[in-house]
Image 1 (cartoon, one colour):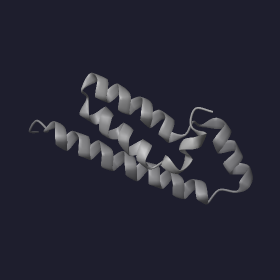
Image 2 (tube, helix red, strand yellow; image 1 turned 120 degrees about the vertical axis):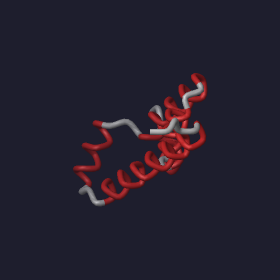
Image 3 (cartoon, helix red, strand yellow; image 1 turned 60 degrees about the horizontal axis):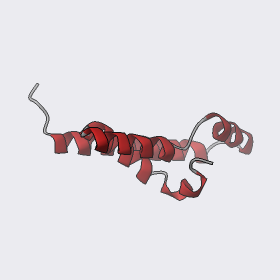
Image 4 (cartoon, one colour; image 1 turned 30 degrees about the horizontal axis):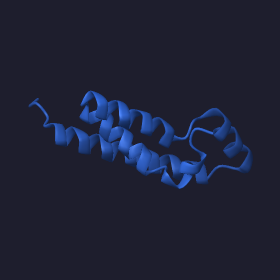
Length: 85
């Protein structure tokens, strides 16, 4: 397999993670109130994890981590006021 260009790595990670974040939202929206409460208590916002990954990826120069982090952040912006609370 040919070596992948860093921009391609970034875009691929961004797209896959954004798709996963949107899928998580669809699944969450289909949950009952009790399931949503359980989900919120068990898992962090994917924007929180994404922001940490984005910063780590940018600091280390890792395009996969940077793209994945950005994808998670962008798909959880609606809940940004609830991150790290």
